[in-house]
Length: 258
Image 1 (cartoon, rainbow, N blue to C red):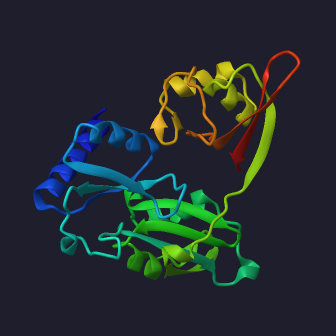
Image 2: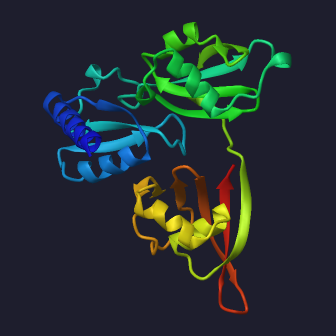
Image 3: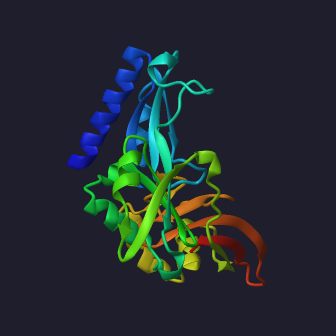
């Protein structure tokens, strides 16, 4: 609760600062729970608009921007759109692909922690074969490129690439099956091959998000293209109903991220 209260206080400070100085202000990278708190808090402000972005479409960790009605772009480092998110994409490649290990998200996060980097300053990590992409705050990029030279036993080279150069298609698998209804718990049970009863605690504990918003009721009805994220299990996209069984159950299709 203390962390949540501090985040709400920080959101208010940044929103008021954006309004008072007529400039765009930014948070650090926010996880799904923090984004949910942001959405609930920003509704109370009419003088600024809250937007989020994580470096690419579909990013899970995102930075929030507080945009006043008439921002003074010169104070924010203006781009063609008037202002830009302080997000940089760092490309990480092994120096010798032949002897490179298969690196995981945990391996990369561990290497960043060893450099003393705060997780709040880094966003998503995308694994594309032997190449890894790390999204981070622009102030960190030079240090990461200079200091991150080894991950586990693999020597690596880090370079900054433009966001437009980043092309990522996450690996997914199609899951089809029958459910009693298109309720959240039914779709989760199908996606993660688990019983509905075993998943109820995750919903009650605030670990389930739909399109970045916290959902605390298992009766929530999913809509086509909703993205469901479950902390500790993964996420999936609900593609919709594709038919009905003879017993009246719904046949649905789910795209699960692997």
